[in-house]
Image (cartoon, rainbow, N blue to C red; front, side):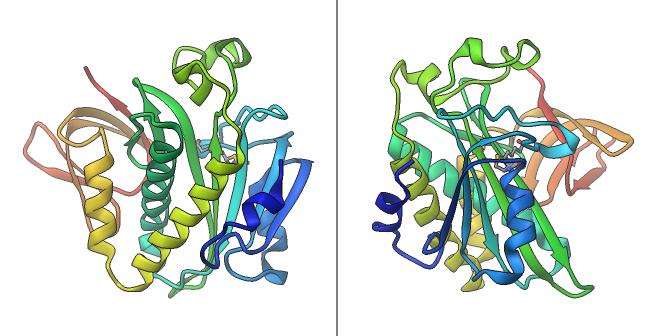
Length: 258
Ligand code: BTN
């Protein structure tokens, strides 16, 4: 990847420093290890990952030369219970960037799946270090399937996963997508720091395909089935159960029921 081409068009603080590797275990792990010695906004990118990690202990398929695997180091200093807001912000930034650079009608499935034609094209794994009062470090790990073909996906996820190439029939260079994601993240991170959480939430609500649908959510040991009504100011999902009760869910695995 031509990292200098990306760096030369970075607009804000996010992406001024980019550490590029041919291969790592996981860019999130590298970012967590390097975070102390780096400025806020530093980014770790790798051409491949040997132990790419997804949410809920899953692995992330990360072959070389095809996709985007990157982790952004932030120090947001917001309350730990607002962590979902960081993922929401990143999902908004990635959706804008992907719509602009690929022309695809990307939507967000709560909280962090980047979807097109009901299949997952990308995902976000946010990992944090906190004190009791605030998030002192957040690593936003972003994986985007760019040039993978259907046959490159393991059989178990082939029906659920897709890539930019799969959807458009064309190969895409990765640099413009990386650049746009970093510039959009910078833009929305400034919105967060300006105290305009509501603006991020309402943009996410505009870009999501989850709200207004019947959903099944597994959160820890619990499973809830109901209507996905909204997300609250902290990014938690509000699900109205058939009993009329509303459940507030901070993280979990969501399936949209047809
Ligand atoms: C998910 O949807 O489960 C989240 C996937 C996140 C994958 C990215 S790839 C770059 C970064 N490094 C990792 O090990 N995971 C994230």
